[in-house]
Amino acid sequence: GRQMQKHAVTINRFNATVEKYPELATAVYNNFVDVRRPGRDAGDRMASTSELEKLIKNTVEDPLDEQIFLSCLLFNKSVQKTNFFSREKAATSFRLDPKQFISANEYPEVPHG
Image (cartoon, rainbow, N blue to C red; front, side, top):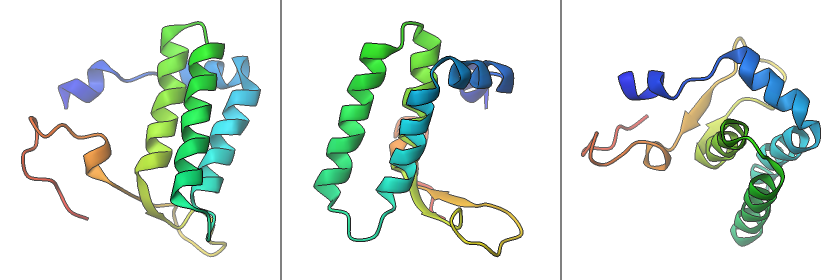
């Protein structure tokens, strides 16, 4: 609860970051698509994510902008399943790997589902 609120950014701040770095925003989106591409080797996926992380750290000057992009990459890495690419859906859903973003100290028992 409080931990997440402390680190929350507004949609306006998020949009401003995307507008400031449109090429990085496109690269992060392409990473989201790429990570889910069937037949893609796990090593290749990790390498492209790692390269993008370095690019973000070398390009973005503002620490909050950097954190926004790195959080998007963490989201990309955390998604285990999604209907994002399905044409017929009532809503978009994402199943996330809780080990990627939940501290073992806060939640010793990893949630499922």
